[in-house]
Length: 378
Ligand code: OGA
Ligand code: MN
Image (tube, protein in one colour):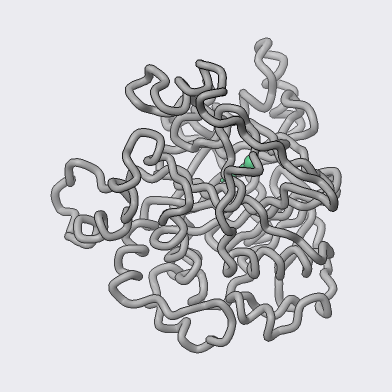
């Protein structure tokens, strides 16, 4: 990796991170993936994997099972040399339980009062039942390419809790809706196991990636309390994740994120630059976990999980055959901290109003760092 990075920087003025991003984003010829660290298979490749031991007493087996997780002592947890505070958990989910979280991402979390990209250029009555308006077309056999795309297929992001304002890159006290209790419970358990008791899930960004989506180089710094970890959960197809340094130009480490994988960015790793240049087909072992019927889930009830009906799972499994969903859960506020209120629309500067409702780009939102569709780094 170091060699690759050095030669990359020598060739042009462009920084290494940008070069790596373009390298992995490239279609023809397909990039060489041998330098990509795979925590799941233990292939160290470009980054040095360090096995980590979590305190198995921090979360009981019952608490873990209640959110669909294996007992903490069975989790395969890793750090990465040179990235203190970065924790990678290779699919800690119980067999069958990913189906519940996928269903929440596709059917439940896009519902009002949560906010999604489609709200930026459609009326609330048109975006109020994305799932119901999409399922029939998604269920139908796709022998012929369907036109036009369903709302679910056009979904790119959903925000929960404090709704991230993509234009101002801020959260506001008055742009808040209740954070889903089940997702908070999952986040609370995982962060507690990682040594961060008392995590408050206050905001989440859900990104929906198609096979040609990417997410540009950015750092998540809009939260007021950076001492709290950032939690990232991935489902569906795999991705290449680039983890850089505190400066945009620092050379990144490339790693795979497969379905069920969990990342915690904490401490000195909380504010590192990162990006997703590429979505890749899930490796056979992970894909098979997603293909099995969701009825397996009925085995461990009692917590927040609910069984996923066969009809729902049929749609979810078709959707994730060529998509990836990532949730990043954030605590925004530390003790005693408060967010400012967003001024009423009438008092906002002209350009802010214009950007929100009609940015002169055919109703499409401006490019922004966390939009997997429109943030193509060039
Ligand atoms: C984000 C983010 C990474 C991913 O939403 O801020 O970095 O894996 N997502 O999709
Ligand atoms: Mn991010």
